[in-house]
Image (cartoon, rainbow, N blue to C red; front, side):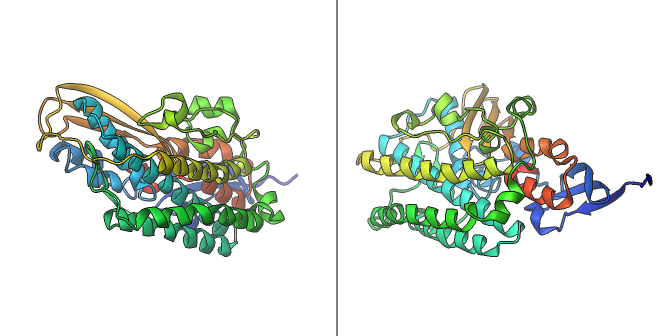
Length: 365
C-alpha cells in the first residue's frame, strides 16, 4: 500500500460554517480528518476584565453581547446572581415576564440553530424559514423593550418595564401559529433523506464522555443524560410549570438536531402556561440606586439555549465586582470537537460544528 502524508487545512476564521470567527485547523489524510483543533481568540473582547471597572448595573448591557442570539438568558443569569448576593426578592409579575422572555428567546435561538444547520448542509430554505418565524419573536421583544437583539430588559429586581397592551394578543397569535410552523420545519428538514443521512451516526458523543468533558445543554441531553437546570435546580419560578426534557439515545448529530426541535415545542408550552398564570402587579422591586453587595462570593447558573450559563462573582463590598467569571457553555462544548471529528470526512466537520451550536461571542468572552 502507498503511504501518504497528512496535510493541514485551515477552516476559518472566515469560513461561513464556523459560526463566527473560529479557526479549525484540520489535519487530513486525503479527506479523512486526523485532527480538528479549534483555535479560538479572534473575537476576544476582555468582557470579564471590563466588569472590574463597571458598576454592577453598568455591566448588564455587556451580558447581552456574550451569546448575542440569546441575550435575555444572559441578562437573567447575571441579574439573578447579583440578586442572590443582595437578597433581592423579585415581584411575581416580573418573574413570569422573565420566564416568557427567556423561553421565547430559547425558541428564537433554536430557530437560528435550525436555519444555520440547514444552510451549512446546503438547504438555504431552512434558514429563510427560521428567520421568518424568528422575526415574529423579535417583534414581541421590540414591543417590550424597543430592541431586537441586545435587550437589557431584565434588571436587578425585575424587568425594565411592563409589557404594552398589544403584546399579549400578538404573543397569543404566535403561540397559536407555532405548532403549524414546527410541522412545516419537520416536513422540510426532519423528513429530508439527505439531511438524515448527513446527520445520523455522525459525530457520536457517548453520555459518559459528554459528562467527563463537561458538556451541558442540548449537546449533553442528546447523549441521553437527563440534566436540565430548570428541572434539577429550578431557578425563578420554573418549578411551577409542567414540561418535559427531550433526550437523545445515540448522541449523534441527528439527536442533537431532534432534541432542539423538541425543546422549541416545550418552550412554547412553558410560555403558554406562564401567560395563563401571570398575575397583575408591579414589575420592579424597590432596590438601592447604587448596589454594594456584601463582601463574599457567589455562583449561580441557568439553562441557556447552549447549556449551563453560570456567573461567578467575588465582591469586596464596593460598587464594582472584584472579580467576575462567566461559565460559557459554547466554550466548554467546543472541547469535544477534536475527538468527535476524528475519522470523519471534511463535510462531516461542518455538521458537527453546526449541531454543537457554539457561538463565538461567548466563546471569546
